[in-house]
Length: 289
Image (cartoon, rainbow, N blue to C red; front, top):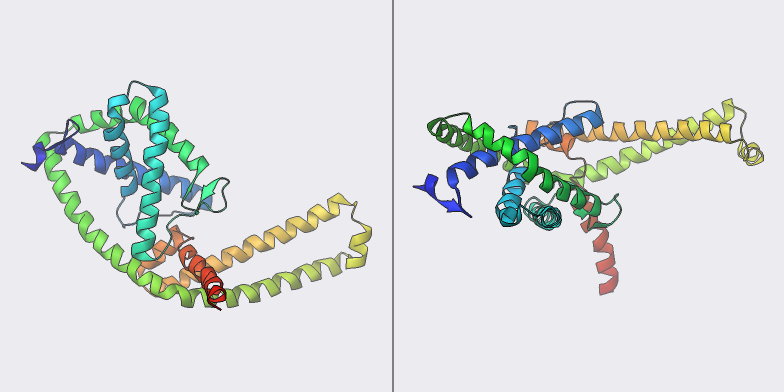
């Protein structure tokens, strides 16, 4: 039976249970972290249910591949970096190829490669791997031991069935999503232009109210307090602008259904792939000319 099939000495029953537990823990971590940063609840899973399957695949891949060297912390650290980073890169490429959208972006991080992986995240995977072998996995094994094998098999079958249905609906929404991105980008560019004009007008009003014309600002370049105050106001306005653009994007996505709106809210860099391809097109045309 499939339950008794083994991978690197581990039977399928335990692999399946560990997979869903790690997927849930990954979803819990991602959702709590992003929700805390945004100040609102954000579901970071690809599906509606509480699972981030890349964490499930990642944790199991790291564990099954590195199990033979589990006694060496140095091997675990660098092995975790290699295995998890490779998985993250391949997953990013596959999801961009299949759905024509980007689900995470490290472009603003130092030492990134194509925005898909970066040094900071890779080092984090190394630390996570050591923690997985030393702390997390023993806890996960204890959790699985709490319930009977029969209950575990039933749970895996039920969760798998629900997961497949959920995934199909989510995938269908993701396929529809990339078709709308070009129109959204055009609408967002237009709105961004309008909002930037409002920001400039507000800044001009602030300068007039404070009596600070451009000539007077040049005279007060050594007035750091005044410059700091104006910069803080400008930054606050730009933050407000970004928030309005995101709300506008979510409103457009909301017209296409719950899943699409959830994707746009949870993954603000979905349009990265479209923008990259759009930048390449003018270059290709110039080369052809």
